Image (cartoon, rainbow, N blue to C red; front, side, top):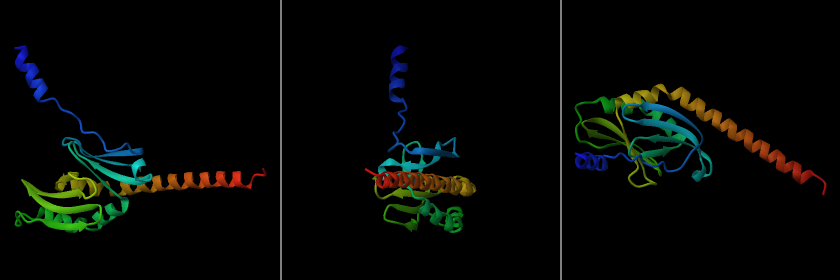
Length: 172
């Protein structure tokens, strides 16, 4: 009996995906706990400490900028109408395409929004109607968090520039 159980344990052992990089001063929001979909907002040290919004699913992730999320929110009515439209089947529809991210619609059991990174291969996530509604409900708090992080960055930059000016002005 020890043989089959240990074999099943070896076959079905879950290995968590590694994050592409740790975000500094990261704020976390849950999109769908049951399906393990989360939104993280923080400073990315690999991207010149810019503020990054990272949508994470169990298998993949996508990084987007706050400006790109604003564009998604401006198209949210159009996106939801396409996602909820049951008459269209198997037709790929592109909502928004930038140099780093592509947003399309796909049918996979139900209509889903596909957010795909063009910079990193195989980095795409699927968001269903419920996920999109959750992200829409989080709009205010997401942008409040981004605004506070921008203010923190501005204060740190001003403090460092003042300190560097003091050392330049100091007599030698």
